[in-house]
Length: 115
Length: 111
Image 1 (cartoon, chains in turn yellow, green):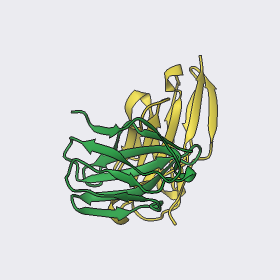
Image 2 (tube, chains in turn purple, cyan):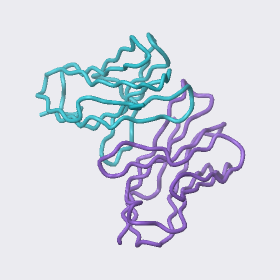
Image 3 (cartoon, one colour):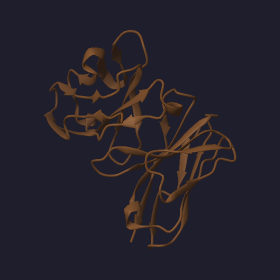
Image 4 (cartoon, helix red, strand yellow):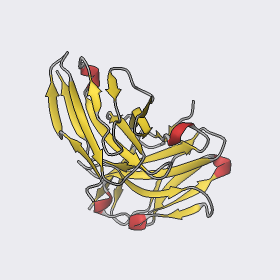
């Protein structure tokens, strides 16, 4: 079965530190890739998405992600985090040929940024 | 646009009771979804719909039912609530296979 792995359960950083959150998926065909963010007490919001084209994708709030097909990875990065980036981050993958556009979510990575 | 709305925000049920979680969207999206979110487990798809009158099971459908009589509404029914259904429930919608927009969630406790 298709799966999505997020390597870190909880990451703690100080403000201005650089961030990289790992995401790997198991499906070998064409995929659509997403990163969602959930701020405390709020619903999920889209950070960025990759469908095709340039594998380096820029999203909102200074986030970017790189799709590396050979590694089945879609890691999220930010050069300098802020306290307001404290949230839970979810990677999600859709098998392009799969049923009805359903997303498979990773278990999430909680990011805590110390001021 | 209100986007995706969900009611209620919170609910406590006794074991064996039933309830309906409401979800509505005003973006004219054809696809709608119900997920449950448990701590450390990410989101699991319960049911989805690709249009009015069409629904299908997701990964964890047992104990739930849905209907989709209009494009806008996608209620989730819990019959005979069990403690294992204690969770946060999110409704989402999308235009075909594009990004999904999520509602604010319903926090349900079954005791």
